[in-house]
Amino acid sequence: MMKTLILILLMVPCFSLAQEFSRSVSFEWEPIEGAKTYDLELSSPQETLNFKVSEAQWSGPLEPGSWQMRVRSRDHRGVPGQWSTPEAFEVGIEQPKNLKPAQNLQLQASEAEFAEQSLSWDPVPGATSYTLKLSSKKSNFKAEEKVDAPRWTGKLPVADQFEWTVQAHLSPEISSSLSELAQFSVLGAALSKPLVNAPQDDWVRDLNWTAVPHAEQYDLVISRWKSETKKWELVQSKQDFQPTEIVFDPNWPGGRYRMILRAEANLRKSSQPTEIKFNVRGGDRSPAAQYTETMRESIERTRGWYSIASYLITTMQYVGDYNESGSVDIKLKAVGGTGRVGAGYLHPDEPWGILGIVDYSGFTIFGKDHTFGTGEISALHRSETSDRGEIRQQIGIFFREIPEVRADITETYQGTSNVSGLGAHYGAEYWYALSPKLGFQLNSHGYLTFVKITTPNGKPIKPSPSFQVGLLGSYKLSRRATALAGYAYRYDSLSYESSSGSTNRVEIQGHYLNLFLEYAL
Image (cartoon, rainbow, N blue to C red; front, top):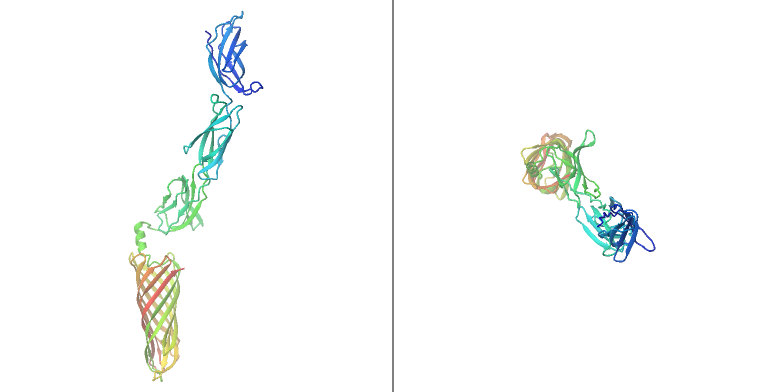
């Protein structure tokens, strides 16, 4: 029996009118010693083909399908040998060639989850259908679909890499080999801009942000403004950072900081950067230090410019002690009040500041309204006495004016003249925090008038003391506003020399309801 070695060396399309979808097939077998020619028989269920060849090989067109071959030799006399054992083989149709997407191409999608994509390949002559096999590397997406045309369209997960092959079919029994494995990627839409939770105060111990959908990591840069160089100085930089929170190093100094944050993910466009700027207090930023400072918030002033407004209302005791001819002493009770406005400045880094105040007061005597004003400007100094308490001292100069109301012996109103002068002022306030919102204030202010501005008779002012004491409860309305309400006792007096050489004196005293508001500008 003849032993043969069958090798299918080449299959290429071969088109003719007789064989529309035949393919060129080549065979080789082991040469037989003494053989001059060979008989080759190729058979299929549809036909049998016989060939006489002089060498141990053959090439020719065959229709796709199942075939068998056998071969025998002939010697120089033409005498045939025995047929070889039939060898079965398949003639398939042409292998498909993937066309689009091109190998390793990256496709950009505008969607964040799934995007419609199309795949195509060269049509295979004679193929009636195709089987597409598609799988992803990242999301475990798999698809196997039979289609009639050399193309496929469907939705694929974005931000993923894919592999695909195609097999062509002529009939249920006749198929091509799989196409070469092709690869491509689908890039997702750009990630959303990160939303950073800006620090609520300057007790910065961490920075955090809301997780960006589909983000896998973040790039961030933290810088500190350096006033000496007028530039942002790098403090920390991180790439491929996966948490959504970063610890703010307690050893970093206070100052003005900036963080730039960008979301990243494989096979997705990076987000637009988010930039925030924030202030960080210097020194100890521990929770214990914050608790102590938070307890002081009810009495804490925002540094910089601020304004005040207050109103005092009461029934006043008016006393006029006159030593001029034709005048009589007056002792009356009068309904009155005082409105006060002012503005001040506290140094951001030092305990000192300045405050200016203007008062406008009035009362009713003999059915007439009498008004007068005062003003003062003082230097301020703050000093802490405990974790919750502090003393604020004021020293400065003031202007004071008091109406001198005159009447005759029948207590008939004769007229009003103002007495005014300049002097020195010293005040002290003790503030104590009960909670982050509530506190109280004890205050005492002393005034000494000794410089004449005006007197009814032109005589000099005599040193005249005035003072105010009070107790106020405070409530922190916001970081910029503090409201106070409480009790105040106020004694205002001015004395000047009478024409007879004795002393004329005017005084007003009262127990006041004091309403007060301080607001940071």
